[in-house]
Image (cartoon, rainbow, N blue to C red; front, side, top):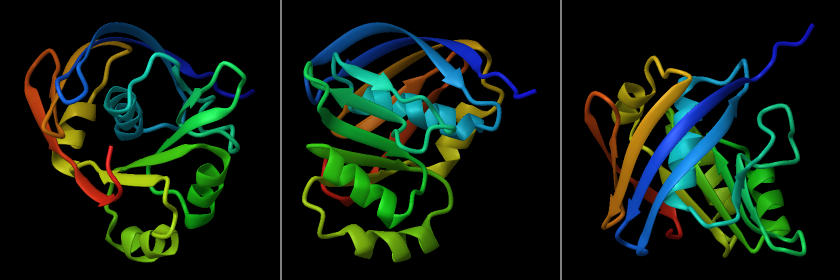
Amino acid sequence: MALQSIPCKVQLNLTDTDRGVYENLRLTVARHPSETGQRLAARILAYALWYQERLAFGRGLSEVDEPALWQKSLDDRIEHWIDVGQPDADRLTTGSRRAERCSLLVYGNNRVWAGKVVPAVAQLKNLSIAVLPQEPLDALASDLPRNFDWSVMISDGVLYVSDAETQHEFVLDWLLGER
């Protein structure tokens, strides 16, 4: 019998002074049984970073043809394909071809990945790649409960995330493009 996804309830207070976005969002995010806390946190941070009204979570790790997040038009065209982690160049190329915009939020030890993949996709004009710093991500993602509240403020391209205990600062490193 297959393990079921775990529903996580997230209260997200989003303040993006760079884009003038101020939202109080209630999200239910399915956490795949094999998904790490870092990946779940990265998906939620990607949601905050590229938030738009029609942005939605994909079906998760078990659906290889979908990104972690995407924004679709009213006629079902993919406007923005957003992935997290360290996908290969073929996946990024596919996302770039299927959508008007393609973005990636990288986490984890990425030196080898970046040296191999970034040069292979550097010619893709609609692709942006940002790297999350690992230390604050580890602190934020440790022992994530099923229900949590985050306040995310984005100012001058820096993400400030407050949870119940502390504030975490994420200075993004942009490898390609921009937000």
